Length: 249
Ligand code: VOV
Image (cartoon, rainbow, N blue to C red; front, side):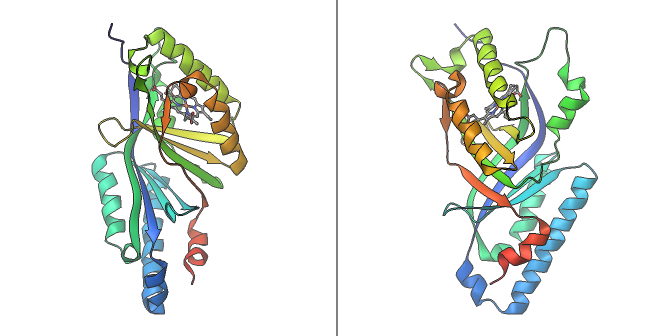
């Protein structure tokens, strides 16, 4: 039996761009060069802020703890072309000379129609549109990880009937709803775009809420039985004003 694919609604394209800072060469650089790199990066961020204010995209910059990366730039844009322009602008900047890529992820903001009721067209719903083209919250913490739905033996998500998947996604949503106001989740789809099937980005005021939510969800059947996870990246908000201190050596 072949199971029916769920329809997805797709919004802004998304790049998670994670960089490692080469602190040794940054420290060795003359102070004028460091100042120029910082000023240029601040100007780039000011440009991104304008795009965000005119509702043509959004972005979030966070520091990352641990060895996997030093900071993440999460960028949303209406087209892949515009996403590429942002990536290129950073890659060509002075600051980029002092960084190396740590990880990157290409995807598109996705909502599925599992929860759609008969006769409803969720794409006409302004709330749905706002979720497909979101302003990324500038909350204190971020957590980003890629994931798959398992496809092995009796645990094959892609051969489960639609009704079963609906039920499991409903239960998943109920667990998530307990964290309303404490966690904002952005799910992006990446089939055909990157190495995993989805990316999960969580924003939180309290870092412990991230751990609690991910832990609780492990017990939902959809995660317990069908979830496979990549590396986790967790960090703290790095707003424009905090960047000079972050880069100060
Ligand atoms: C605040 C937390 C929260 C909430 C409220 C929430 C709700 C919902 C709903 C209602 C729906 C279904 C409709 C849609 O919107 O697509 C989803 C969908 C999805 N989710 Fe979710 N999720 C959360 C949070 C949340 C987390 C933490 C994870 C990672 C799982 C884990 O174990 O680490 C996750 C994953 C996903 C995925 C991969 C999908 C798409 C699956 C597919 O097969 O298409 N999600 N999610």
